Image (cartoon, rainbow, N blue to C red; front, top):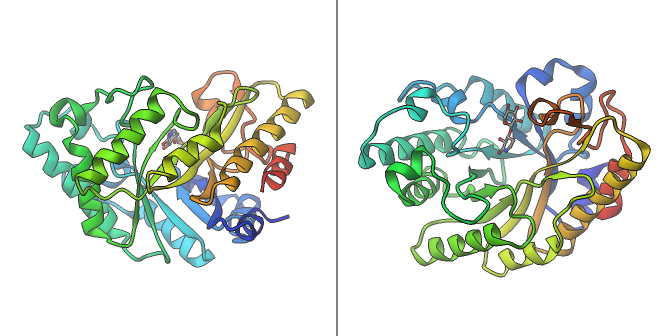
Length: 317
Ligand code: XIL
């Protein structure tokens, strides 16, 4: 069974996965990754981020990002650009720099414009770019290097620079804990309304969906619909569902149900355009390195075998 084929049969644009440059030397892994009937879309897990692409001011390096973009092109896969502006994985000249507001806005404009411009038209029909994690869980603006100096102005600057650099690329705001209703989702709905009223280009909302087995938010489908009702599309951009190790058959069975629930929620809303898993195998998942004692979050296990979660995805569509 092939996930991208199944997703497109249900009217979705794609089923996709994140990947990362060091993984590409593993041929058992790439045999699955490169199958466009399994994954019709890929996202660079790290190599298009700010620290990777503009390590010094005005000095751009796209070597590793280009490897991912060229792989997508060769495989006939869509590409999601990730990301323009984010408070993590910043080079120190941004993270610890001292800027006036005008200077920092020009830094954001130059970064987003150059990055998005570099990948303009490289993958058809559309490249999607995200900015990331600009809100706190209570719906207030995250206090990061960008907001401390520019307030909310960096948001419009980033989106406008990206639009100007590639008018055909879809522009998303991407975050976690906006998959279900709550203060943070409400704040993002207000952001969509504000940006639209100000003529700032925003095309979509990316729901990361880094979940915990047995602890999904309620009403994901209704929440996706609430965003779509505002005139933006929605994508599930970084799905994984982690558990406290060791994995047991009971946890894996619950994980199957949880994957099915998330997929079914996206599947039920026409404006939910696709789902991306944050890598497809436990062998390369970011989870164990970030959440101590947790893992087994992906639909393929460490030996690249499909898990019950894979069946959950199939059943969700
Ligand atoms: C993660 C990568 O997968 C890791 O390899 C890296 O060390 C840290 O970042 N939200 C995001 C992604 O938007 O970019 C993050 O990716 C996971 C959380």
